[in-house]
Image (cartoon, rainbow, N blue to C red; front, top):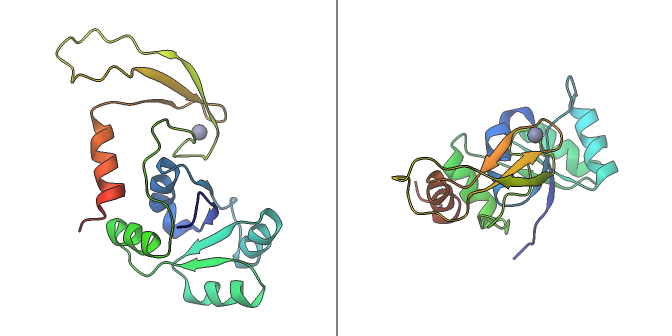
Length: 155
Ligand SMILES: [Zn+2]
C-alpha cells in the first residue's frame, strides 16, 4: 500500500483533489494559466505525481520521466476507486491537515462554541484555520459521510 503522496491535480480533477486532501495527501492545484508543459515541469521539479484525465498529457508525462496517474472516470466515486486500486491511501485523517480548497497547512485555532445542545454527540469540537486562505474547518456531523465516501468506495 502506497503511503501518503504528493500530487498535482489538473484542472479537470479539482473535486477529486479536495477529497484526496481529506485523506491527508498533499495535492497542489495547477498554477493559473499553466499549460501541459508547465504541469510536467512542476511535477518533475516538486516530485509530484500528476493526476490527469488527459491521455495525451499522461503520455507526455511518461515520456518526460514524470510520475503520472491517468484517471479514466468522470465520476468522483469511480475516480476514488481508481486511485484506491492504484494503491493510494483513502483513509480519512482523524484530524484535518490540509485545506481542501488551496492545499494550505491547517493550524488548530481553538474550539468551537456549540450553543445547540441538540447537535449530534461529537466531543471533538476543535477548530482549524488554513494558513493560506483562512478557511475554517471543524469536524461535524458531515464527518461520517466523508469517511463513508472515502473508505466505502461505493457507487
Ligand atoms: Zn486554504
